[in-house]
Image (tube, rainbow over all chains, first blue to last red; front, side, top):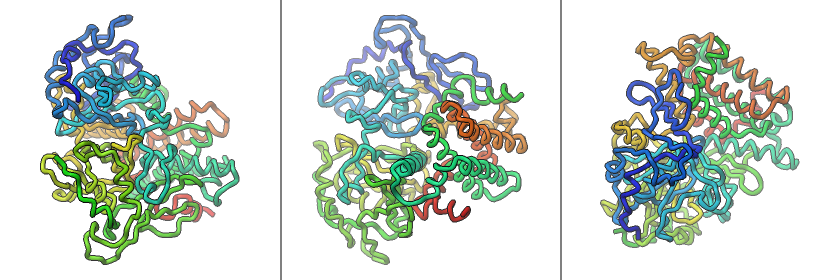
Length: 303
Length: 303
């Protein structure tokens, strides 16, 4: 299906100056400190900034692929991917903040080159035999912060932030058909997204709030908390105190995990009352680190 | 490569009684409450338990595929997957607690059937033209809690808990080659895993602790906290208070997100001091929900 893609785009790659993405990695240290913030402030005390050799052509009208700056090693890199007999590799888009797998498609060399340069997740459409940038129709781009290859170099993760729902159905991700649900006769339901633990908990708390509003369902501790701000606040204080106690009184580390779970759960009920998503909290953390660092902020505020 | 797989395994699927996996979903409510806990306690007040039609053949010596219980709809389900011309679909294994993408392979009908029945992530090895259960050599199985299909029904997520590192190199996941790092000349480094925001933050805090031990790196707020338990505890109390204040004083929701970020960061520094991983905290939350529910526990403790 996919012919061997042209290599020309690989020779001149540029980061679009209009790209809203900020490639960020919080790791630090001699061997793997990375703060990749293509257009972020240069001052990041305590963090080594690693600009991925991108020159930003401010105001350039040229397309990303035809523009100025060059990654000298990009040809070698693109050739090192183990493209299959059709010139393709699996490409998975993952939400940088929540970890949600948004969609999976295929990339050819040109699609990967375009993703590296534009920082918009781009795939090769096997049905249309052409490049396809997710969002080019819906405007729900996936703004790529980092790209990973697996150990076999034939599978790619586009780690990024979606501008909106990824699925063409309007669902947040394309994965909303649970096989075990289907085996029980349930029809696919876009509200029944694949979710990992933290977001399953968040969904449960949301559901409890809906039940409170509707007056449905059984009594539960979550509902009690949702209905009583004073109780909720006193519980958060109490759980914070119990977490602290595990440190000050040198309690077993399993106690720490348990108390942190309590604190997290109760704090997430407060988030629900205030209509704040955990994804927003993580975005705050990510942006702080990518700008001046939470450490610096905290230090400024307190010292 | 892959011949059309035998359909026999699809006709008699059973959940192994020895499977340690617990399929859990925290969602609730009329339309999509799910608590899938194949062998968990039947009493889950406030949660509807959805056993995926599995009869557990306790003490049975029969193999999972040859055993007793039957999903009557499994043939239809397996036939509804859009297998490619080789009878394959992409299968992605994801950590149920952290959201980390562990590995990506391919499944044929038989591999998917075996995964449904054994709850161990199973793939079709294209190089060996045979089924391959991840962990059959290393014993690092991926214990599957749920399985999702995408909107096109040609891409599968195995949502599960790994028993140990997934990559054959011993790395936690197979994705440790950052393309932007590679473009700057960095060699792949198994410590440089693909990580989403929460785990990038956790890594950064760990790195700060290593620097404290080594006496290297610049001064930072995180290091100050790591070295002063009293300061750390007073900060956690303070941040919990500030989060609460956003509710009691009806502050803007952006304040709530910001204060929650502060609380989470400081609490994660305490986790680091106590050598507790966020993944352990999430596991506690998941297990509580899959047993009697955090709500019930909290209610029991307090009322």
